[in-house]
Image (cartoon, rainbow, N blue to C red; front, side, top):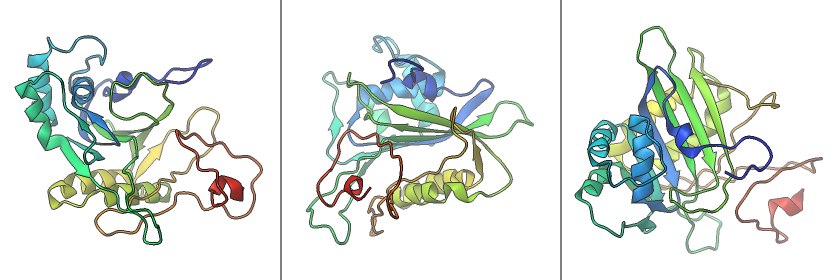
Amino acid sequence: MLNLHSQRLDYGEQLRAFDGYELDLGVATTFSLDLETLVAASLSLGLDLTLEGDLRGERLAFLECLDKLQKRLLVFYQRGNLKVPENFNRLFSLLEPLLVPTVALPAVDSKAAFASFHPKVWLLRFTPLEAGLPVRMRLLVLSRNLTFDRSWDIGVCIDGVVTQKTTNVNAKLVAFFNALCSNNAHQQVIDSLCASLSSVQWDNPERFSEMEMLPGRPSIGGAPAAVPLDLEGRIDELLVVSPFVDADKHSLLVEC
């Protein structure tokens, strides 16, 4: 991850379950998807193994892991942006139930003929192995796709605990994940995660007193797209992290 002077965020480490917990449900979103990278991520999610090194010797571990993840993980990606492994392996066919090709439609007032599905997010729910402990959740927001690309990356990892009290801080994030689902076959997973998401108390990142989720809602399944930021008037300070910046006269950055 791109962080030269302080902490580094280890992608594989952030996918591992908390001590005393196991993955219950998860959703990932990405623009492009490399199946070999998903294999590595699956080993980290299901069996607490590293993402590094040669994975060709992990066939039995992968088989065990995929068996666990069949009904626990969905990966939404831009349709057509699936990288097929160079060497065929029948085990890759076990990934198919996890994959959800997605097309994001342009906003109603957009003149663009095509809009890309571009979020890079993981939402994971972990349940305790022993009774009496709370359900925990983790949100990862990244700038990289689910590939082995070696580009520098920047990301944030936020942990939280599911409580008995509904909170409004996650309302926009719930709307984002609800908008992903255009297939009834995936609705149960999305509904279950969103039910927990509605009552999560997040741990604020270091040196932050509060936070708010501002995801842009993709236009999927007929739902209108939504712009994440509505800048009402000028502001004193603004930090933007983005792989692409639109700075023409209609840009939000210009309006600041």
